[in-house]
Image (tube, rainbow, N blue to C red; front, top):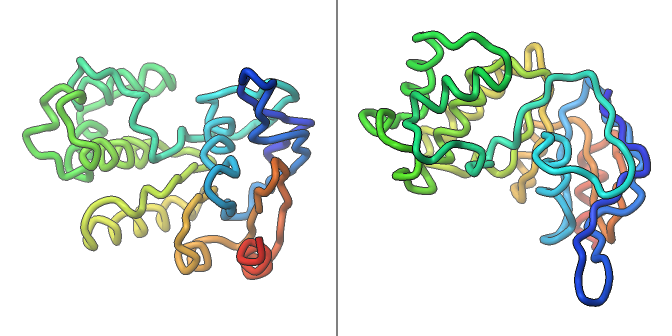
Length: 216
């Protein structure tokens, strides 16, 4: 279970705090694959960053005993001066996982980077970084995977590979998915959270959440 207790996230402005999320009280079950819905600026990516520990609430607490991934679309968490291979080793150390050659080669093969895997990550294009980020995430066995539009990356073959990889992981894990592709959310998720006006509402039905979202 992931629990939000009176969580607020705001940014200071000259006119006072601008709230993205305000007084969120929410439980996310372990046995649901959850779609995150909301208009642009509703706080979808902010919510994922809070869940992944990349950012922190200004108020309230998020409690969980789950091993949660970073947002899979996030490409800013790597050390730009290190190569793709060196970053795998670095991330393994951060998460207390022993790095090995098989893990490194898995990331290289899945990301389809070829020789660029031995170059600094700062030299990668945005598309290469996104593929690399996804591949690194797939090298770990997280309890919950946070996915932010990453399945839109690459050609049709790579998108299919991403969906298949997530499908395999979901045998023992769940996902929290942000996407504007309603058909993808229907295929991948069996519950939803709708963000609007700084609030969050949990839905057992993805279809009901999509209906409410389209009425905003």
